[in-house]
Length: 232
Ligand SMILES: C[S@@+](CC[C@H](N)C(=O)[O-])C[C@H]1O[C@@H](n2cnc3c(N)ncnc32)[C@H](O)[C@@H]1O
Image: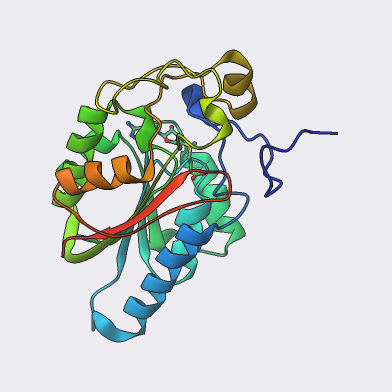
């Protein structure tokens, strides 16, 4: 029998390059559902004739990208890994046609070069792979890809999770925190890369420092930090 990763019963689905497990292809969490609700509201009329554009940054296997497309957004899925085929599979499973989505292989840092104005940006379980200063730059790059009334749905692995057991970054200030996990945690969660784990106030301060207005911050049952922000 396979070990589950958490109380949700998620299974090991490794992403490229030691960047953790893909969760979005297994279930929609509370933050994903908030993004879907926003898309539904926008599709229902607020934007008139214009398409609703959603970005899924660090999309992994494309589970949330496909859900957002299913609910009527045009979706641009972005990942530094070679995820094109997996995203295509997720789209097919949701019955989404080819005209409704695209995948671009690129790092979050390059998002500003896309020349798009997104109404919804989802970035789940990815930002902790960047050093704190780089994460701030990346979140600024997201601003330059955002429409004026864009909403950002962001999450990071948390300091109040089991990932922190034996984590070398435990005693470090957040702007200096960047370390690998203890071997057993690293193997279980497929996280081979160094990470900057966050407390709720630290992620909120990071996002504010990049020019976003933080609307909501909360923790998942696992202890990861989830956040909603706008350009307020
Ligand atoms: C743990 S997975 C999360 C996948 C999906 N968003 C989810 O919530 O299940 C992290 C993803 O972030 C991607 N990633 C890591 N660093 C990145 C970067 N600098 N820019 C874009 N994607 C990145 C990885 O390739 C991986 O697919």
